Amino acid sequence: MNEDKPHPRRADDSERAFFGRRKGHKLRQHQADLIDNLLPHLALDIAGEAPANVCDIFDPAASELRLEIGFGGGEHLAAEALRFPTTGFIGCEPYVNGMAKILAQIEAGNIGNIRLFAGDAAELLAWLPQASLSRIDLIHPDPWPKRRHWKRRFVQDKTIAAMARVLKTGGEFRFVCDIDDYCAWTLSHLSRSPDFLWLAERADDFRLPWAGYTMTRYGRKAAREGRKAAYLRFRRL
Image (cartoon, rainbow, N blue to C red; front, side, top):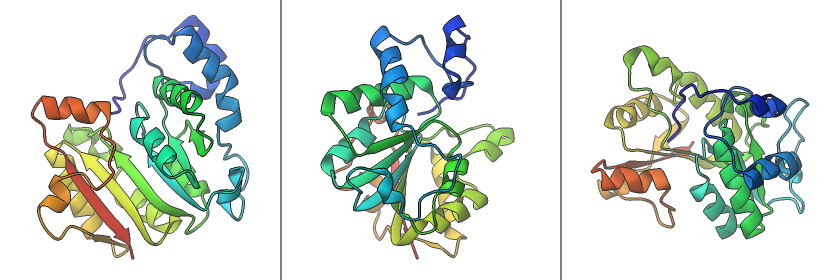
């Protein structure tokens, strides 16, 4: 789960302005090398206009495109990329430590179908062409539990509309969370959207992970501590 807490600034952090405001514990030397040398080849630049077929950002071109927002340690993203080698994946994660972790997995697994974005997911959604994604995953996002912070939750009417724009008809938005209030919030917001249909037909459809789901480190910790996650799937109409 992403925790947007301030962290002490290191002197060498200013050299990695790409991550500016999102830092955690000090990187190990190899992690820092990956940030400096591998990331520039995988980082998605949204300064210009997106290509008409965004699948062309991969070589060879991907058969379809998926997005994971806030991938944390990258366990789920890396597993999905290995499982679906012809699908292109964009991982969005503003924290330098999460970026270092996924880069290590990309290097170790020689994964070629992931591109990375370290900025605001809303900006990435605005950049992507209409109907360009087959799926969006949001797994254990920061719940912003205090009422005064609810406006910071990713799931809002505006972002739901943005996701509807970039998802293909029949595409899916998948949401995993162990915080009951945020699950209820998400169901409430998605249920009033004319663009999405909740796919659950029975209790186990949201109480159990979908087939092939890769449990994240945070998910395992939540389970050990007795917190049960909900696994919500919504289809783009």
